[in-house]
Length: 402
Image 1 (cartoon, rainbow, N blue to C red):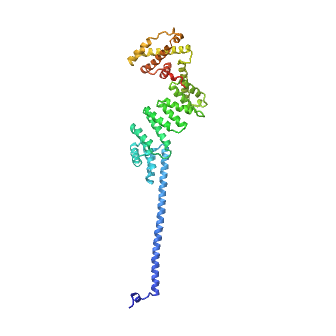
Image 2 (image 1 turned 180 degrees about the vertical axis):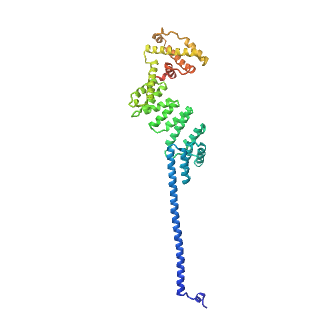
Image 3 (image 1 turned 45 degrees about the horizontal axis):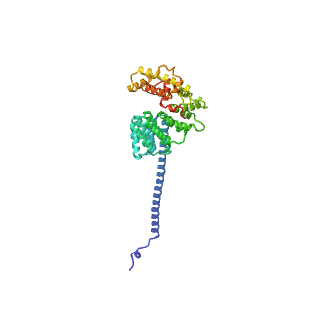
């Protein structure tokens, strides 16, 4: 019995040729389709890359323009440029931060705050964003929020040299606290900054100046003194050391520094107001030393200074007690009785009086000091020699301290 295959008639030569042509056409069509698809894919790839590159270029152009506008002081126009940059390059965090900053500079505080807070949600520890929020809080007068945001900026993450950025933030916070008369809080921040700051004279001088504003001349003096030891000598440090020493009543030390400042090569190049301030402070310091009954003086010279100081303080007491009824009655009465025991005419009190009664010297000078302090509280800030005696009264032992 024959199989089905054996019953099939073989293809003729013409049929085989037609079959080959059909296969060839199918293969050719398929290859053509593949070629067209590949060509379209390549064209699409290049077109997409070209489009993406063009978008990137446009985004960079708008960003460059925004930076130029910000540098020129046109934040409102910069906002529009930054918005355009983000349309071409969306989700660029740095550009978004710059847009929020530009909004703040243009006066759109509410929008800037909302923008910064949105950015902060994704990175709560971003130091720069917290710093910008602190500045906005300062601008709006929200002290508690400002200080909190400054602290978050100090604790946050920073790109680049975070060490120096945090130092800059801390100094900015200190200046803000000083503007709010929060001297103690500012002083604490400045002392931290001083301990963490690099050994760079310019930074240290800045901190010392801020400490003076925070009414901490003692800490400022220590910074100035260390810088003044360096070579070449910094005139700002010498003047600062002299100024803060004088402020603390350390007259002898102030005289040494201020005298040194006068002969510094750069002194005359300073503004006239600065030079006058140094000269006036030195003159007051020399005058104070001339009023001070130093232990190493002769008995006669010390006595003459004491009598002069007593006379000056008595005149201040008389003017104050007769011109006002303010102040603590108990303290006023006590001082009145003490002055009643001092003779109105001191001309008969000779050097021998002090030599025979060593305690009298201390009694009289204590009376002078107490008088200057009480009258300053009651009758306002003194002037002239009374002002120098008041400074001496606050720290008598510091006058000749080295």
